[in-house]
Image (cartoon, rainbow, N blue to C red; front, side, top):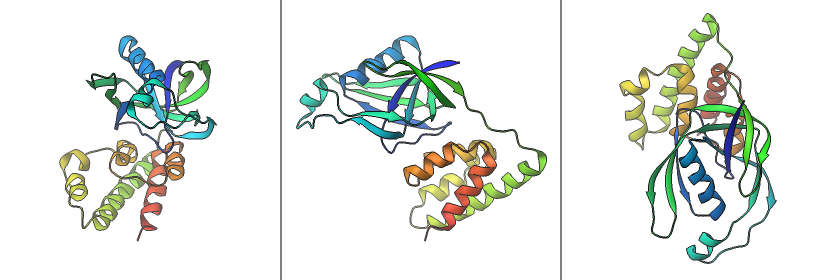
Length: 213
């Protein structure tokens, strides 16, 4: 079992092996991120199921720095990892990078106020057999070629995918880290995150890419 601080952000589905940049200004989340920095507790950046309470609209950063906004119920499967402080502004805002390492299943709340801490368990992939490993290599290659075809007007992605860093990635790592480069609608992304194997993610990713004009 493990405890994680939970940072729910609507539409933000994160994957292991990626880095998520954060700009934190709400008082409760500044306190939460400071707790993570002080104690080494990891944080999960995750999509949301629903809004629990609506926050009061703010007209200025000064108001945002002194008031909390909406409260959300997080999804059950999340990615978490340690955070690093990049910059602290004079007015107390925090710029951080969260290095997401693993997937977790949330089991229950340890604390809800002023911020949420949850008990969780690791959510690992199923171990593939030899036939599935071979199929995953083929799927990875097909996805890379499909992305290169879709990104003709954006040379950055083809250049990255043809680099040694990406060509040598295992299909397992690729099936997560790919989503640091591309994205689908949050519901599809959460569906991919919750899949229990790289094979399922690669099949679904290729299917979604083939539906893209």
